Length: 143
Image (cartoon, rainbow, N blue to C red):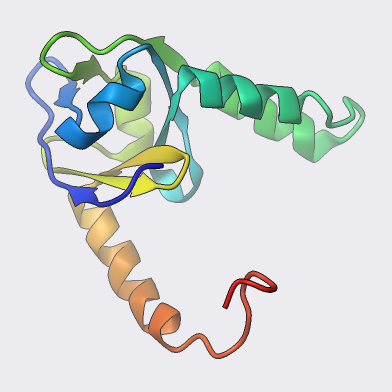
């Protein structure tokens, strides 16, 4: 499980140092791909394989499923972090997420998300009030 918020920077080669607490789980390999709200999703390779198996259940005749899979898999990049815990984020993914220098890396349960710092701060500001005011079950039986 990935938890927390971290603020690494991209270097001039498009590399990002993964937070130390995430490195062990990602050390065997990871997949970076496009996520919703213009962030990047980072999955441990084993979790990405599980996700892939689930997506294979979608009928090929469902246009929305085809579209989603095309975008997700076409933009995916697999990698093994180097000894310093760095990963290279390809230019296409950096462009998609608007990543330049200042980044925010968050733990999001089974995945890590990489955000442009400004985009994350705006997203969080827009949603924290709604989160604090939730008065009904978002996930049945959870709270």
